[in-house]
Length: 578
Image (cartoon, rainbow, N blue to C red; front, side, top):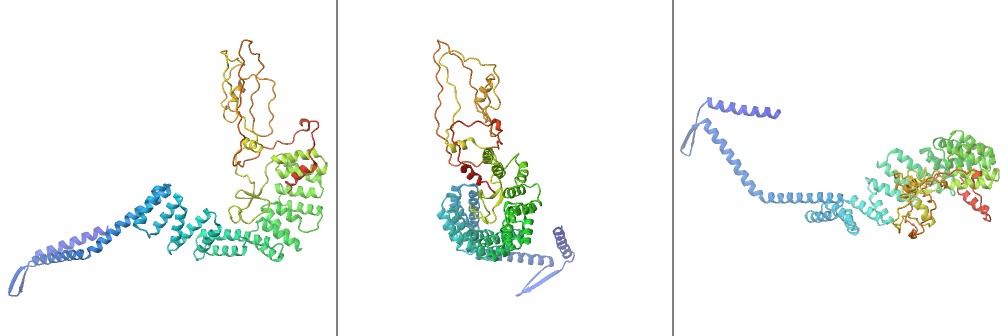
């Protein structure tokens, strides 16, 4: 709107000036070198304007002629830059789409047009990685690391290549070099922290963590948690050599992360050994209210060395009273009751858990039956039940299960990776029968296929025909399901289910005498198959717990069968003790 107003104002001013000059005619006389020129004012103004325009045009033409070499060079540079930009952009698109041939083609074109551009070097490295040329990618990244504008990018590429070829020493050197700058990238700071943790350099890891926090690479809650983990790891390393220093580190870790179970358990043990029982009980109790854990119960029960089993039971009863109805509380109380030979209390605590017991519950019940009644049979039944019971939580990190807490994951080197959870949490699906066959070396039996009869007689009718089941061939016996449904019901007993997946079967047909004149029927043949031995057995859930069998339904042992030695299952039971 403002531009329109300015345009109208300028046009109006020019029109006003032209009209003003036309309404006021006058004569202009110019005498120069004896010649006299007379004209009007309007004509003189028009001549002056024409001379000015002509002078401007001549100057522009002369300037263009003088600057023509620079203009041509600029045009060529612009055209070359556009071609290089198109080559780089199309090459990066090819890399992203996984087209190694097109990426290599555009990379060569970009190197020919603009060999020193950072994006050209990046495209060359990416194309080399995509085509599997690790040596070429490493050379390109080394060239990038030698330049100031692409130094961090080159170091990152060299770090990635070192990790791919499983060279942790070189990867650590590249990460340390990239983390020297004040504005180090996040990957370098985290990598250096993980390498120092993997080497057990807890003091160096604390320094690196402090620099990461000051650089803004991590937020305050993560900083406090990771610092508590590192302090706990350092305290565990010093527990046997410098107990006072270990106690100070553990207390600082508890202050930073009161719910960190290893820190609270370690602080409780060290404080209890030093006679500070009340402070130790307060720290363990605060952590127990947030997250009940067997390590906390163990540390709380043994706060004062030399206490009797009944004194430990009284202490555990006080601790578990803060979290009634919790599984870990019940297990800790049952363990302490068994140690104190309070079998009635142990049975009272464990009985509500036997409906769907975990492995630890089943192991404790086996120990209870053995100690209270000396019932070897019931104890063995509970130990057999423990093998198929639900797994208890354990310290797990990246699929690795450990019987004690570790500050870093042994798989990935990640700090604070261990969690107290079911190792198979998130794994779906029942137990695969092929896994058991592979472990036992039993060959898979293919389904039987009937051969054509030698005679022309039609097959005998065995009962009323029924339509095939919609579930045939879908995991319930395959093709044998239809034949099983078409048979008349007989007195053949159904197969027993032990809590696992249903098992389909084909009942035997009734005996039938072949005609005297008929040719003998060909026998069914079964081709042997090699035993299934997969390279990797999938990690899946165990079958459902079958429960304790009734004594009346227990199958009798065959005569002459040797009983298992007493210490055989006892050693197995020790594996499930908390």
